[in-house]
Length: 132
Image (tube, rainbow, N blue to C red; front, side, top):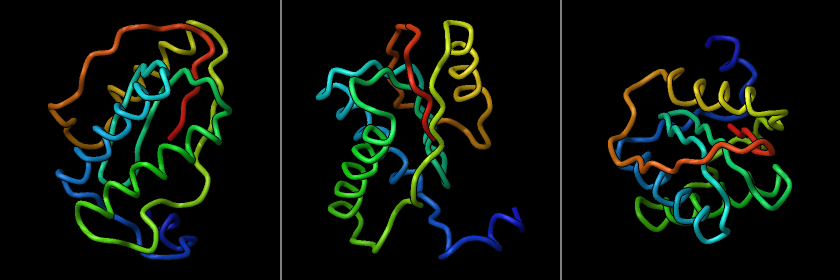
């Protein structure tokens, strides 16, 4: 953690429980609006993990999620210059086994307790993209 902070361009953002809930709701709404398949979602205080099958490139999906979440957070808790770091980790899912592994990592590899407002969205098809 010390190294990560040493290379950061600005102070980290720590989302409150309510802000994490907002982000989770917005991501679910956006994926429904776009008709994407949400396989796994974990909103942590310092970052977000999403496994989604989307009809756009991974960087576009990340940008849309960040944009929608930023607007809602700004409306709800006040405007910030930036809520998110640049880019995002983009890992194409190779096959069914990789998808299962990505979902497990997102859902079981958490650093803090999950929020209880997760909705169950079954479906596990290859071609998903892991972002986070």
